[in-house]
Length: 203
Image (cartoon, rainbow, N blue to C red; front, side, top):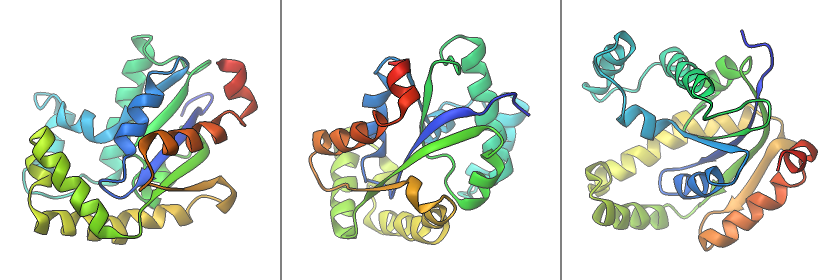
């Protein structure tokens, strides 16, 4: 149990909605610390006991259990605190990919104080598919190269992840059109962030 919960903004949306793009930009602003669960999972040390548990599921193409995901997140955040990369007393967390479903949100309630959930919405799924295929070519991301796999990922998002939006109070949810230019999406996110009184003081 932590003595005080970490102040956090969630960047949420389907694969290809631009979560990572926005999170990385915000993470470069002083007093914001960006944590992308996917990036951290890809760099996990498989020699550790926790890493071995991760491999047990990922090697079979299975989702890592929620309890294990949250424990891994907690340990990595704690490491960032100890390394003075993330300073909870003055920094805000920008989270991408965690929590990814209602169960994870429930488990993380004791650790994070969610101020806003920025939902990058794109109802026209064909646009997300095109964006992911383009990214696959640009970044050589084989997980995005197969259109069949992309549609499967989007279906998984709809069934397992999107219900997260029902976990938080409606007043915390900010729906943003993800098909806009990235700078327009960023401007909308920042508009809401600066309304947080302690966010402005921290800046």
